[in-house]
Structures are given as structure tokens and as C-alpha cells.
Amino acid sequence: MDTYENYIAGRWVASAKTLDVINPSDGTKMAEISRGGAAEIDAAVLAGHAARKGPWGKMDAVSRGRLLLRMAELIRRDAEKLARLESDDVGKPTALALADVVVCARYFEYYGTAADKVHGETIPFQSGFTVMTFYEPHGVTAHIVPWNYPLQMTGRSVAPSLAMGNAIVLKPAEDTSLTALALATLAQEAGFPPGVFNVVTGLGEEAGAALSAHPGIGHISFTGSREVGRLVQTAAAKSTIPVTLELGGKSPQIVFSDAPLEEAGATIVTGIVRNAGQTCSAGSRVLIQDNVYDEFTGQLAKRFKELRVGSANQDLDLGPVVNAAQRTRIESYLDIARRDKLQILAEGSFGINLPSGGYYVKPTLIGNVPANHVLAQEEIFGPVLAALRFRDEEDAVRIANDTPYGLVAGVWTSNLGRSMRLSRSIEAGQVFVNNYGAGGGVELPFGGVKGSGFGREKGFEALYGFGVLKTVTIRHEL
Ligand code: NAD
Image (cartoon, rainbow, N blue to C red; front, side, top):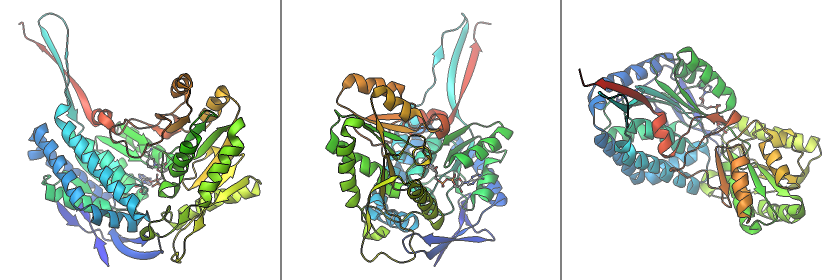
């Protein structure tokens, strides 16, 4: 059985304690990782600062970009190996894990080609002066990522920071750290100088808390739950450092009677069951116009009944959820639905030869959910779709905006004017009209409003977040 160590200053460093890595498909132990804490975090932050003082700090943007492009090549070369590791560790179907590897490589490629395209400007000022701006790195940036898309979230957070010239300290989720460590090996092979790319594994309340409170950090990029996001923000406030918070969502899919209903149905079902519903941008509420409610929920129900749940390597529609606690959490919401006599419209089924000991949940469609019910308000983070009714456009916008979250929304209509109005009136960081593809869009700025967080990742916008704008004013007529 493999025992994985932290990667600090270009070396593998064991911690005194370890954590078990459990395979969610069958509940068996598959490896051990280091249980890093404050000492390992401190060493990693110091290594980052040392790297910034060495060749990395002096490297020009073109050369930095080339290292990121080399990293993308290596990720693609090892795609199958990385996908297998991710699939075993997270429980996701192999095909989905392979798609995640491709997206991870795209982040390094996108930011590799962008590294030398970040530039400041000159600003007209008083006669005899020249004023210019520069983007400079924060120094050492912290990256705390969740367990649902480890490779994607790591690439998304780390690649733009490296492109900007920062050194990074990555704290992967304790349940799913293996591909972060595999990326560290590739960073070494790609030729990133020691100390530029550091990974400390361990518990959130130990390694994560130590990282977010470390005074040597210049910026924190946190992706995870609202509760932990608040703790990280509080820790960052103590050392007055900027934070990007990418938190949860309760994203609405709004279906008008003039929508392409077949296509909408297929996309909406995929949008909630992909990765067993453990996706921040999952469209977990479907708002359906009254006059097509029965027809449309009928179509959705048919699709739900066809869904099959299996182990990661059976590669069916859904794999297991990540751990026992997550399964219990999802089941508790399904218990509430039964207690409150909500309509269970359809369920998927378990495939044959499901390994015992895995964390499996059936995808479930629940009908006529009142807009203020917990199933329409809280992020379940599982394959559970709540169907709600609305009367007209005004009603749809009111219900869509009536949750603490604002991450993504889908609008399904053939009315151009309505699609424009809703795109502006819905409170979300991204709105999709007649499609719903939040997961892959490396080029598209992404992030939340309200309880879904702030700051933007993805796209060119993310690069600016990992830099600090400096204004230089030169008086040249003495
Ligand atoms: P989580 O908040 O429990 O954990 C996220 C990370 O924070 C993990 O690495 C964890 O170890 C660490 N952590 C835990 N306690 C900490 C502490 N006290 N200090 C510092 N770090 C700590 O989230 P999760 O359960 O891993 O992920 C699920 C959540 O993430 C959902 O709410 C989901 O919507 C959200 N998410 C958001 C996005 C987005 O882009 N908006 C993407 C993926 C997931």
C-alpha cells in the first residue's frame, strides 16, 4: 500500500502522523497520506519565499508560460494514470475523471499562453510626469481546494497564480489528495524550481487552518463550503490579506413553456447528476412554468428512472458519493422530503454487482417543492433535483433569486427579449441561456454573488486576481 508524503521545497517530506485514504466505491483503505500541520505549512511558505528570491522571482513571463505549457503536456501524457487515480480516490466514473484531466491540462495551457499577455498601462497625468502600472505577484499564494473535482479545482486555482509569478502552497482536501501529489511530481519534471509548487496534505482544521492564518501568505484562494469559507476569511482578515471565496450554490434551471423541452430535459438531468450531484454549479432546482409542469416533470422522471449507479470503474451514470458523511447528509434531506410528504417523482437504480461497503445514493427527483422549503433553499450536494412551479417571468425571477446563494443559473426559452431580461435580473455569477456548461469553461470568468462567495476564477479575469497592481509615477522634468 502506498504512503504519500508532503511535497515541500522540491522534496518529499513525511509528517509524524498519517491519514487513511478510503476508496468510496467499496469503503476499503487504498493508501495513506501525511497528516501535515502547522510545521509543514510553515516550511512550505518559507520554501515559497526562498523560491521567489531565486530563479523563479527573476524568470521572465515567457519562460514561466513555457513551464506551464510543459506541465499541460505532461498532464496529457499521464492522462490515463491520473484519471484512474482520481476515479479511485473520488469515486467518479472513469470517463468523467478523464474529462477532468483534460480540463486540468487546459488550465495550464490557457494560463501558460496568457502569462506574457498581462500588462499594465500608462496614464495621462501632469506635464513632466510619466505614470505607469505593473501587475506584480502577491508572493506566496495559498490554495485550499475541495474534494469534488480535485484535479480541476487545483488547475483552476494554481495555474493562474503560477502564471503571474507567485509560488504556491496547495492544501488538497483530506479525502482526495492523491492527484495533487501526482501534479507535484509533474511540476518537478516540468522544471519548476524547488519551492515554487508545494503541497501539504492533512486535515482542514489543522493544515488548512494553519495555512489560512499564516502571516507569510499574500493571497488565499479558497474553494469549499460557506461555513469553512467564513473561517478562512476571518483568518485572512487578521493578516489583512485578500481572499477569493468560491463557495456553494443552489442554482436554478428556469424552464419556460416556449423552451426546447427535450434538449432542456437532457441537459438539466446531466447538470444535477454529474459527479453524483457533488458539483458547486449543479442545477439543483428546476423552476418550471405552470402550463408545461406536468409534461416536463414527466420527461425528467423518465430520464431519472433510466439512471444507473455503479462503482467508479463500472463507469455508469453515477458513481458513489465521496464518503459516509456525505451519504448520510444526502439521505437526511431525502428523509425530510418523505417526512414532509413531498412528491418523490422518480429514482434511479443501483446497477448489478455494486460493491458492498461503497457510499451509494440513488438519484432522486422531487416534485412540487415549495420555494421556501429546505430542499429548495439548502445545498444538498448530491443527486437530488427539486422541481418547483412558476406562473410568469416575474414569478420565475423572484423564486430564482430567493435563496442565500448566487452561483450559476440556466434559462430555457426561445424568446430573445426574455433571455436578455433574465440574464440581467438573475443574481448569479454566470447565466447560461439554452445550455448549461459551467463545469468545463476554462475561458469563462466564474464565481459567485451573495452566499456563493466573491472574486473570479477562470478566464483572463483570474490572472488579475493573482497579481497586485502597482502604480509608478516618474517626474522626468527636473
Ligand atoms: P469544505 O469547506 O469542507 O472543505 C474545503 C477545503 O477546506 C478542504 O481542503 C478542507 O480540508 C479545508 N478546510 C476545512 N476546514 C478548514 C479550516 N478550518 N480552515 C481552512 N481550511 C479548512 O468543502 P468540501 O466539503 O470539501 O466541498 C464541498 C463544498 O465546496 C460545497 O459547498 C461546494 O459547493 C463547494 N464548492 C464550490 C466550488 C466553486 O467553485 N464555487 C467548487 C467546488 C466546490
